[in-house]
Length: 321
Image 1 (cartoon, rainbow, N blue to C red):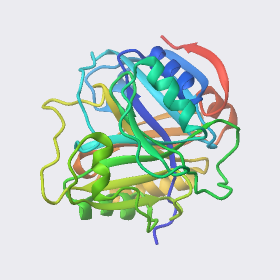
Image 2 (cartoon, rainbow, N blue to C red):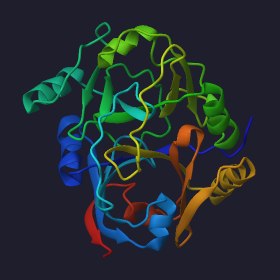
Image 3 (cartoon, one colour):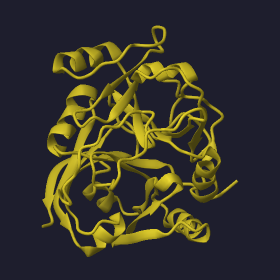
């Protein structure tokens, strides 16, 4: 078993309207604002994101999970391209949420005019898909099978449950996420072949693997999916992480040793780091794994920096331009 695995601590999106999208997640599901920062730029940021130039704003939201956030980017430079993605598209393709009252959420979604798909499952275990204002697919899950997840630190009606990635080679993806990032097989299954109907696709054979840092399925997990009988829709030509949709997923720890161990494995296994940012003792790096999936590696050992960058409740906006 690989040591020093870091759990999912962030799901990042690129949005054309970041403030509006953040407000939508607040009003639809109950995510809570955790601050924002405007005017982020510089050669070091561009290097880390593997972009020619960067000028962006970020908005942060938190749910019930400790040391976890949604991060919503608005890129002024480079200009974001719209993208039509689906849960069976290659790359980061869908985010799963657990909601306390599915009927209330569905009523709000329908009143807002949002897409709402067919509801599957019996009462108490229902699931349904929707899309956020930027077109990102979300699966809402009614059942919460967790028993006292240690990451729950605040009372909110929503908690992030999983992130789905569609890959061309499940073995190669498993090697990256397990051997390099250190995630462990939970032994669980999130979707069956018939669940393709949740997002309007025909049932088709899938090979899947569900991973987490501790090998349990009670926190935020990564679902890797491969379609052996058909080719997943690829990313658009010229795609950049600044384009609309799920930007990447971050794995992090408050312990610097965990971060250093993962960075060393990335280097040793041939996955180059794009660049690293350091703010005091906090450090952040971007890398590309199997199928070019963008991941962030993060350590924040300082509680003040943790709050400054949106991992705890706050209502402040910082302008760094």
